[in-house]
Image (cartoon, rainbow, N blue to C red; front, side, top):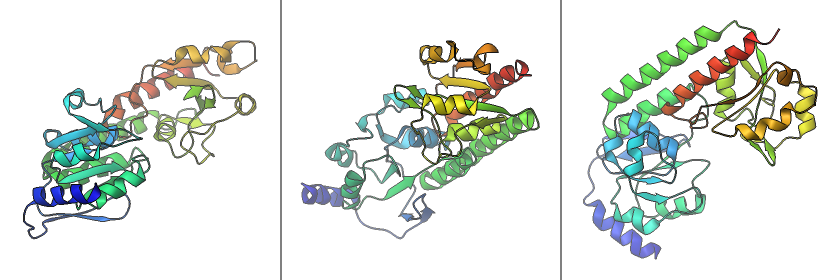
Length: 289
């Protein structure tokens, strides 16, 4: 099957030409394109979102499941998810670039795609400050540098504005609950932890290196958070924290579900959710002596 797909890919690729674009990806590989990529397959929601911010949304011909930001991405054909890719469909789309999530796209299937000779770009954005640079690089790949640079600058300015607004305020200890069964939170490697820090908070599990570690209830109680919060409609899962455990956060009304649906999306659409997080923490700050 791989040989057949490789033959088809070779036919679709057409004659080779002198390389015009070289960009280093987040795996340290140099991606070389003969011309700007105008048929792009994006295999992660955050990559799709960043491509749109880079002005390259009209060039995306295939996406992964859950690519919902911006709204226009919902109309693009889905060719896989975090567990399985439709290799034949990807080849049929005649991509001149495939963009994969370095730590999330199935490695074995990416290896098969690599054998087809289609350029592959590995993306991995883990900090808020990385998003503008990723946007600029995506613009280089697609030949949309003007839009990419403008949007990257706007994102950087908005982040600086938030950082300045909340710098110097009383830092609150925050427990951010991702899931309740099992109890999961965010560690240092998760962008939510970075957002909490920017908003003047301190993630009580920032010492953990995993992106989404499982923790014990006793560990949370021992670290005595000032605020317990979650996002994305999981408010009911917080009810256990308000029931007779002596938490100061519960007594002060600082057990909060926030409306921040893009907070876990490491791409430009995260910004409104970061702003919401900052404002909610500021409200909690006013309730905390």
